[in-house]
Length: 240
Image (cartoon, rainbow, N blue to C red):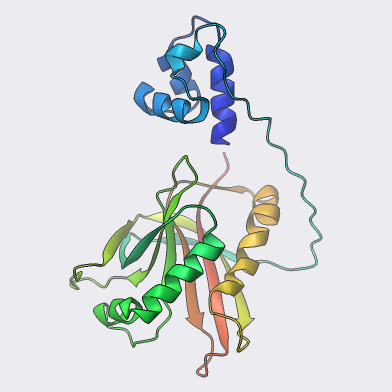
């Protein structure tokens, strides 16, 4: 969607007398500097250079979706008003595929003791399931991911751990209860929660996603750890 906006911005600028600041505001950028940085990353030239004739620019076609909604699987969701809080954990930068990079990251912090250290910091039993937080979404497609948990008031943050401020926010919360086979790692079943949210729920709902951290929350559903509850929290607002 950003690429498409910058395609339209380039069309407005190409060979015209339009002011860069006007185009920047038109396509949702708060300053000419932010617009110029994003524009040059995509097109390889500055907005001022794009105003000249015979300058090569990139074009991304209009986005279209082909969605097949079968409707045979129900989706459990609720709208939650979440109060501001602070989360503590360990952060990694996701560069390409979160569904391969995050499991690898989680395996590392399990093995090096960071997972246990986070739980001990907040006063939870060792082995308690931690949450996942997606934030700092960049225009180049990278994002930050933190494995962690809410930090109780009065608790300090040890060196080597990160903190994330969670604002007051409305969330659409989707949940799923899954059995965990012996050969399946906890967390992989969250794929079954994410997939229909954007293909089915958002296109047919009266809500839209807004800026803010997305969260994955995990709970054991039973004492023998063979069944888990997975939740995806997405910041939303009702459409105007």
